[in-house]
Image (cartoon, rainbow, N blue to C red; front, side):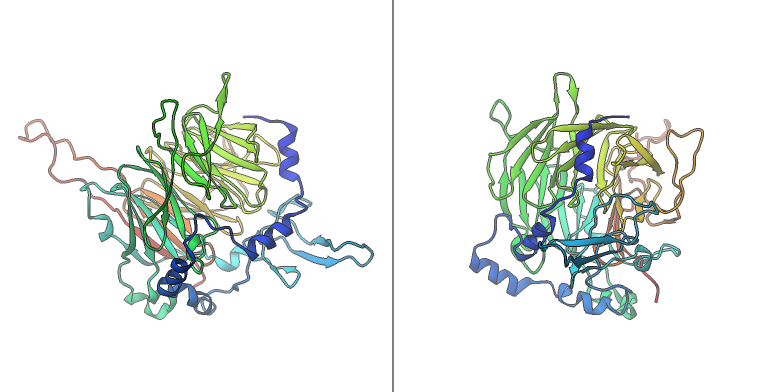
Length: 505
């Protein structure tokens, strides 16, 4: 169900004439949030630049059938740029050879990298191999046994440049893991030891949300940072190398008291931090820490998005829109930068906990807590659900999913420890009992012995990281027993695991 207007359709399909200029400008000079001083940045770059980043491309060239210049766009869009001899301007003509998702003449935005006036395309099927069970390479277990006795992981996320993994856990610590050196030589995979956290960032109270800076690049230490929000504290910007606090962004209520954000996300350009509150979104400029922010009320005069704002999604393919989720089961599409509500999507059975755009920006995927469905919304026909992906989700915690670079495969965990993979090129099935067509998984395997709450795909290479765990309670003993509860907790699997999902040869 959706309430929409024609404006958002025009925004979704609109061309961006200055898109190429913006992209080249972003490549020439990346915007840095709250940068180091010059001396400090030089020292950090010389001392702690990860070696894995330097050797990444040369080693994986022998393992993976794709190149460094492979783009993140859909695999069936072929685009060539040619100069027009008759026209006096320098604008290139774009020729579309094929379309996406098997739909002819579909209007799409293209994610790609420009090389010698030609946009090269990568096929998901050439990168990933989901015909066989993924191979577990390594993982981390002991890291999550310390601290609280009932500690468990609460998700994992690859760094945008793929150099490390960040995890969140119930002991209120963000951990950063570097990839083991043996990973770059497949003959040494049997010798890989358990991963250990190289950086630990501790928050005072329960962590609500966390996010990488989207333009993070390990070769530029000033961009290596992440943001987090926790109970009774401001939003914090942390240094990804040292774990030191760089800046704080403080939200105040009408009583001039600090209130904590319940969710946060950088926009696609890394210039602003969006923070979710009760019926409110507050937006901070990354370069201006402190208490200066923009306020957007999502619910007013008995209309709009009510409840706690729980998640955000942005797409570089259309910077004029943002997607906002609420624990009241609604999804709002807003125009940017004015923040006007253009459409509300309703259909999720539980509070929305994650939103993610497809790589071409035409589809929006949503998942919720205690909700067995991941819904695929068609933004070219607002209010239309193309299909749903079914999983087991019976807890209130966030259960993440992720999409491959070309948008073909979707991966998610389940409460029973199974990891499921869906191929979006397959035809969904109509059922009489479900509200939407159901897309059946193409592969599923037992990845953990507990709830799989974290799923994250490497931004470049065929690597998948998953995390598991959930809150456990002691079993209730029979009435004739002297004690009320068992002394030991039920069996748990609080771990981070790294999987190879590429070709075997």
